[in-house]
Length: 189
Image (tube, rainbow, N blue to C red; front, side, top):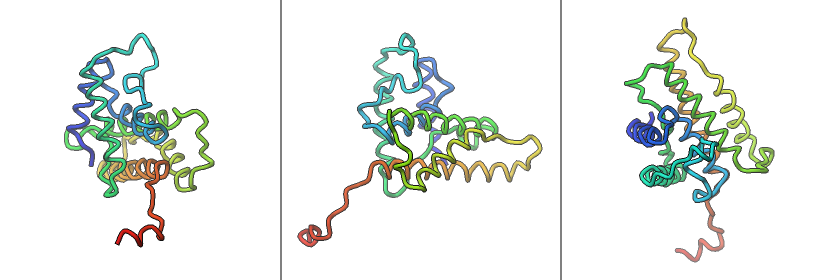
């Protein structure tokens, strides 16, 4: 469902700068920012940290985050929908912390998505606006203590899939690929 090794690498990278618990939020913020900004315009070390004094100048961390950005852009652009959310491993982490991580991912995404001044949601398609509304609602997700664990696991998996596809669709809507003009495509044959 998600790339747990990439999640672990990001957690270790962020731990070096004091944000080890924020891997899902960071990845969400990166994905949201990539939807509305050019990759090289995003300050990767300050994506979730707002205190200028707290931003380290660690070249290893910067390299790791630049690589994550490159991998994330490639995944978001993948027409086979290979993009994954960076979340804790389903087999190693209990449901409640995974739900919290998904909530953090959605919060981060919305933060990154809102990072572009003047972003006009009304200019998005109705489907895209619905995805943004749903991601906002998902920030309130929780697991009830008396709920059936199997049903909750299924619901969690469905939410993760919806968020994964929704984030990629938002990216694709805001970064449309050029299409060939039918008149020009005749010359390609």
